[in-house]
Amino acid sequence: MRDAVRGVWREAAKFGVVGALAFVVDNGGYNLLVFGLPGGAEGGVMRAAPVQASVIATGAAALFSWVGNRYWTYRHRHREKVAQELTLFLFANVAGIAITAGTVFLSRHLIGLDSALSDNVARIFGWAVATLFRFFTYRRYVFVAP
Image 1: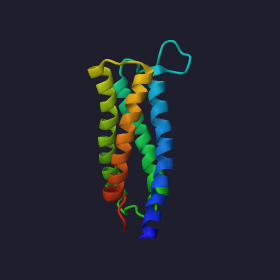
Image 2 (image 1 turned 30 degrees about the horizontal axis):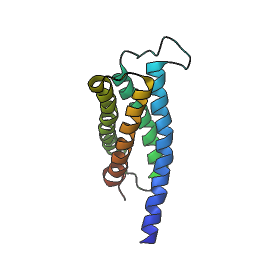
Image 3 (image 1 turned 180 degrees about the vertical axis):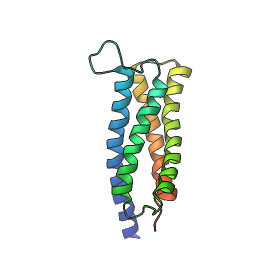
Image 4 (image 1 turned 45 degrees about the horizontal axis):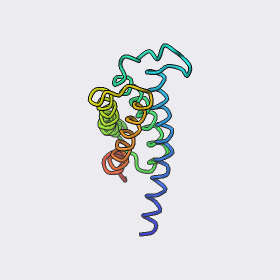
């Protein structure tokens, strides 16, 4: 029992490191796309399309995450059929993208907030929920034990 718990904690820690780096890719990419470089007065190239920018940034982070999780976190659990594994991974991440973009949509369009702070709070909340969803989905369906 102790070894199983230790194994899950080790796996969760690796998943957390990959996730933290993916978080930087995701939120850094989003802020660059919507708000531009720090100190820039004009904003980013997608300042008028924050939900789409969220999808692009989260998609880039998802690809980074697949590589990190496949070759480090779950290197002992990945499938022989890479295409099948990637398809399941992408399916799980489409749901994660919808969760993260959904919080931006709610914040922007239903609540009416449009500042960098409100966008980032919405994205962090969405990212946290999506991360929990991804961890359990990866363990159960994507990176299965051989």
